[in-house]
Length: 122
Image (tube, rainbow, N blue to C red):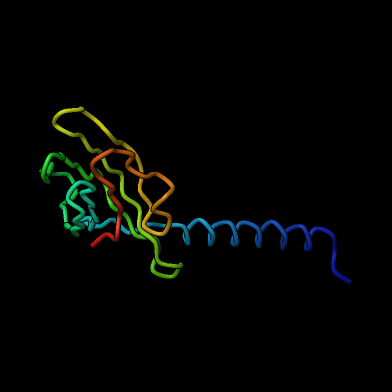
């Protein structure tokens, strides 16, 4: 017959092993650039642009800074996240927050002239 101590040791060990495995599975891979899609509503044009992480980039009236771009662990369902800051020359900062490639409507850029989405990180 199995003693209660052995059962408790097994449960503690297995819970530590499982929690450690789950924590490792939520790792992210840092990427060097973000691919974003920008729609100029007035012109009716959509362009896909690759921007480097950590460098401010100009696009028409927008100034865009990608602070970080991450991909989910390769063993999980593919998704990308980027922390983006955007300002418009005439209005100042119009967006600062996380974008999620699989859920573009979660943190949309709400501006009268532009819509911006994260496509992926490279």
